[in-house]
Each structure stands twice: as structure tokens, then as C-alpha cells.
Image 1: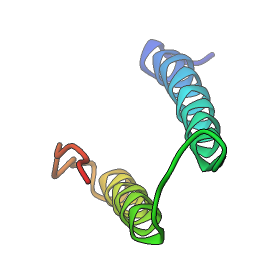
Image 2: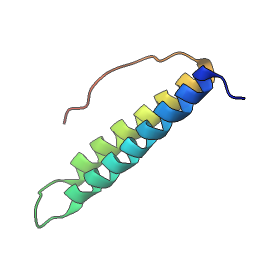
Image 3: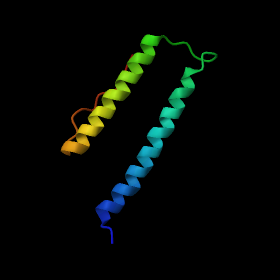
Image 4: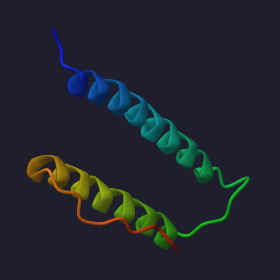
Length: 74
């Protein structure tokens, strides 16, 4: 039988992963050049920020400690 903390993790993490995936899909909608204007530098900055956040996520799960809570700006 699973314990409450495990159940809570599965419930919360599943919803958050779904939300992240959905937000990434929504972000890809911004690639439509009929509706948006951007440079390759803009794309590089976005992808760098996302990749850095993924690195922090991985480190947090390896160490059990979350380091940063910075936002993204162009």
C-alpha cells in the first residue's frame, strides 16, 4: 500500500508535468511567423533558459535541494 506522501507526489507531479508539456506546446505556437516576429537570438535565449531550468530540476532531484527561483526576461 502506498503512503500518503507517495500518493501526493504522484498526484501533484503528474498534474505539473502535464501542465509543463502543455505550456511547451503553447510556446511552440509562437513559432508561427504569420502571427509573431522573433529573431534567432530570441529563440536561443528562450531555449537556453528552458535548458538551464531543466538542469536545475535534475540537480534538485539528485540532491533534494532547489537552488534558484529566477524568472525569464528577454
